[in-house]
Image (cartoon, rainbow, N blue to C red; front, side, top):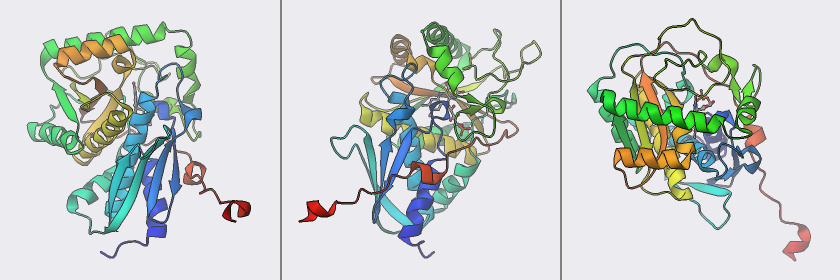
Length: 328
Ligand SMILES: Cc1cc2nc3c(=O)[nH]c(=O)nc-3n(C[C@H](O)[C@H](O)[C@H](O)COP(=O)(O)O)c2cc1C
């Protein structure tokens, strides 16, 4: 395949990047295009001051966007190299540099097709078990991005995780300003960002094993209707620096795209990693040296549909023009 001209490929890669998941669908990113580069910046105006004061979830979201851009460039026939935190600017999260033409592999194409189909599905999944081969592919996808993915298997491990999710959710809800911040990102369609009420899943109920964040979804009839043996996994990187958050974001997105390509629905849970003490307990429970970054749930379900994104033009930062005087 002849590679798409770079001037066309770079904005197309940004269109794919913005399809990434982001905390509360804040889309906390900006992109700057060069002749053969895409620079990814954090948008500090879209940080969640209560739920994410250190910007960890923001960086995870931007890391996921980086992975999408890389996959899109491969699909368009370009090889690229990514440098995380390329300079001292804390907002400059990544530089993706195109290194030359390279034919896309079938694996790249599979992931690229999944970008437009992936979305969070917060509803109940079927009770059909996720096969071992699919589980292994998810673990391998995390490894391919320098991350780990621990599968939470059996009632003892599931109850441990469920307990930590529930405690973290209670602690967050008791934090002043948390509920208001969450409510501010619940949206009615059409809205270019935030979580649409129709994507929230049914209202959480006390009998649910896994406490979901309450995005104001429709009420549901009482009774258990979530899967009895949920497939839950915890993803992490090998450190706890801003660089590791970006690494984890790429690992997360490769896992999610691999799941989507394999016909699995997914949703994310981050309450336990948003509370430092609970995050540490989860790390200890998993016997990991580095703290976990996010939890995900996967299974078979009817697709629920994608969520909106801001137009690409809104997230592109023009390259600053050098003032004439400075050229003298
Ligand atoms: C770092 C991070 C944390 C997230 N935490 C949660 C969460 O706790 N609960 C939830 O339902 N979704 C969570 N999500 C999913 C986002 O809400 C979702 O990606 C966003 O609303 C966009 O929707 P989409 O995934 O359907 O594209 C998280 C996503 C990211 C990247």
